Length: 338
Ligand code: TRP
Image (tube, rainbow, N blue to C red; front, top):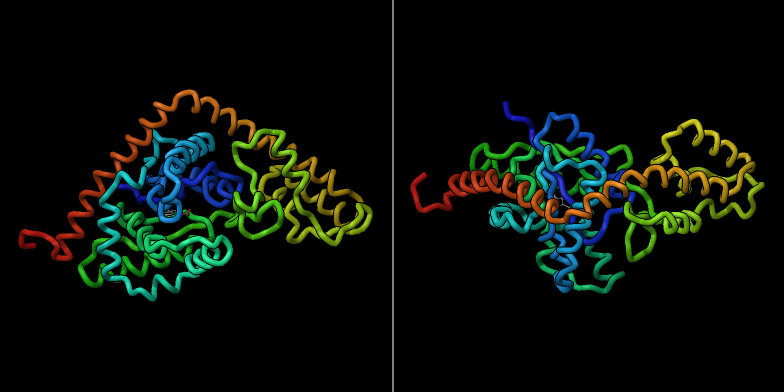
């Protein structure tokens, strides 16, 4: 019996942060550790290139950073395949074939893509490349090239998985049953807000805490975190809802009783922001310490790390070649009679 397959991925553009952990890595590790799935974790370097092509070297460095973050949070290359997307050309071949049956309107209606295009054009004043404008189709190819059954992702990725499902269904209806229709799964915290309370975490907004941030930086960042803007003094009642410091306590503090107590005191105006932040600093230090300890171990042997990538990529490549041949055969893109 073959196990159901999981495929998920991340664009390597820099080291990962707490939002990546709660929104993605935590769930990936849990699923990996059940032993019930064959897991593929994709370093989507070619997808990252669609808006970072002008920065050679950046993505290569980020691949190492992301791999270190994966290893240090418990993703295990002995159990799961770590795959470098650009090294599987079958993905881009499949992207073309899938794009050929995908109505442009399906791509244009994608709310995540729309939002990203708006930010690139209006806020960052950058060019939207043609590859960027259709990366969701490329992402469908990432998923379908291994016939994945399940895609654990952060909330913002749901439209891409829905698109993948539609493309897979259309493909199957047109050319015969080739692809499973992949399900998606979101972690308990689908999205973590930035330390400044804004919805999007981003390096350029300087509102993220990286998994690899040293203690001192974490302390500074927590001390600067936004809280309840209406609370000007520690002895007036404060609001918990939407308050970043409490959202982070909820996400990272394993002591639920303490969190409940802190909330109660805060609501009653009996504890100050600084005290709640000091608790959060301890919580994050406890959380990050073992992760960073493992990171240092793996950093000492980058050759070994590269061998994990080569091995995982090879494992996916074998499957990709088979699926690619099957797809082309069914579409009639072949020199031999089907
Ligand atoms: N778009 C995802 C992100 O930005 C990365 C990604 C690429 C992905 N291919 C994927 C996620 C396939 C899930 C499945 O993080």
